Amino acid sequence: MPRTLEAFSTCFLLLFFATKAAAARNIRNVMAESSPVSAILIFGDSTADPGNNNYIATPFRSNFSPYGKDFVNQMPTGRFTNGRLANDFIGNCEDYAAKYVGIKEYVPPYLDPTLSIEELKTGVSFALAGSGFDPLTPTISNVVSLSEQLDQFKEYRAKLEAAIGKDKTKELINNALFLISAGTNDFVVNYFTLPIRRYNYTIPSYMNFVLQEARQLLQALLGEGARRIGVWGLPPMGCLPVVITLYSDSPILKRDCISNFSSVARDYNQMLKNELNSVQLQMQSSGARIAYIDIYGPLEDMTSGRKYGFEEVSTGCCGTGMLEASFMCNPRSAVCADATKYVFWDSIHPTEKSYELLFQAFRPVIDALVKN
Image 1 (cartoon, rainbow, N blue to C red):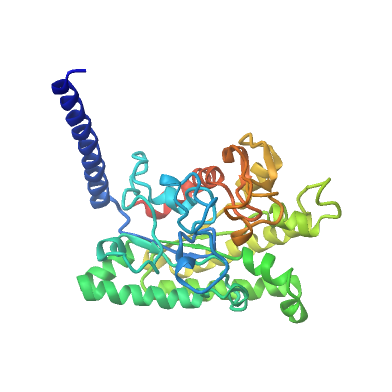
Image 2 (cartoon, rainbow, N blue to C red):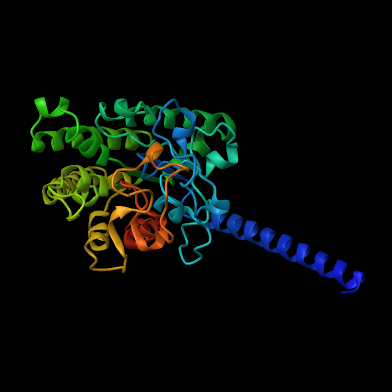
């Protein structure tokens, strides 16, 4: 190729990609300005933690390979999966059909010290892996409790007030989408694994205790001005690979879901739905929208093989897939060739593919929360 033509081709390609990147930024900016949602603000556990655990002294981290192997640039961000979380799909501006998205491509961790005010304005996640509604649960992994996440939200609010003023901050919070994803650790890591809570609580009374803690967080957020809140229910806990491994009579040969664990999740979810409906009625005059987000049904469909066509439903992609999570799923671990064929990435957490399907399943609920 003549040098002149080669130089022209190189310049053309550079211009093409620069133009494409600029266009993408412009689309994001336009969509953010027209979005009925000002920000996404997230509380919870590892299902919603994009990397906050990177910034605290806990062994329960995932900022190393093979985590993130299917994320942008194969980067381990601290998300407990191979790619994106469900929350990232909610905020991802590349889905042009969803008018409320476009405020940001990925929801960042609040504890990242490099975040700018512009990043803070469009939302963050306060969630930390290992956390839960029960104040005892986060102490097991030495992480931040949900009440402390609420304190961080108040700190976040003060930062915004200092930067854009109280009135604009109040408006931003009123128009933000709040998401809460927690509870699984309270039962799987805490109640069923350690004896402490079982000494004082039966399963029904513990469900009421956890629900009371969830109610307090919900009421605190409403008191802070939250008006659009989605709360995730529990998954079919008996279908988590780690639960099957620990509680099955034959975890190697027979990896069926443990029905009594999933039954607890169903009962709790019904109680949670009733509670959210009650709070919604109480707050109706304020214009608040509070919704239950069902992840139990879609995950049950995935793990039962009834829908979606996954090839492996009872073990994770990382290592043996039976017990590995966090530091046990590490650079020395073998990983499956194609994570899209697996429901779970490690022994606890879904793959990016599963999170995307979960998002598609509960998207109508998000649509209802954010509509003008």
